[in-house]
Length: 74
Image (cartoon, rainbow, N blue to C red; front, side, top):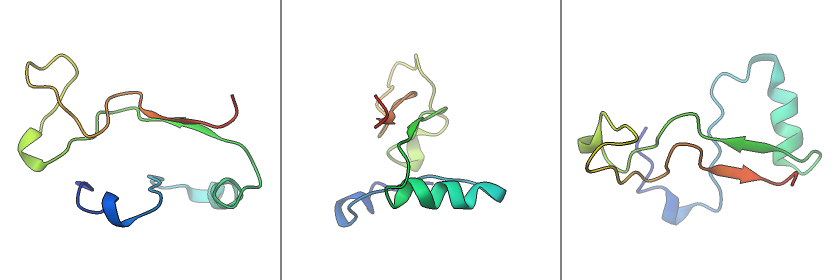
């Protein structure tokens, strides 16, 4: 999912695939009922031409690197 064009027109972006029965927990976090932490388990590319993108590639310049994220609980 390439999101580069969407970021300038949004206040926040949350990637939450298949929350399943944990949808209430996701809602609690988004509306301030709980602290959270989350980091990317993969590299997020800037554009399709970067795919595949891997840490260590000579031209590694992702939108968000592996491990990027927020930790409000700290």
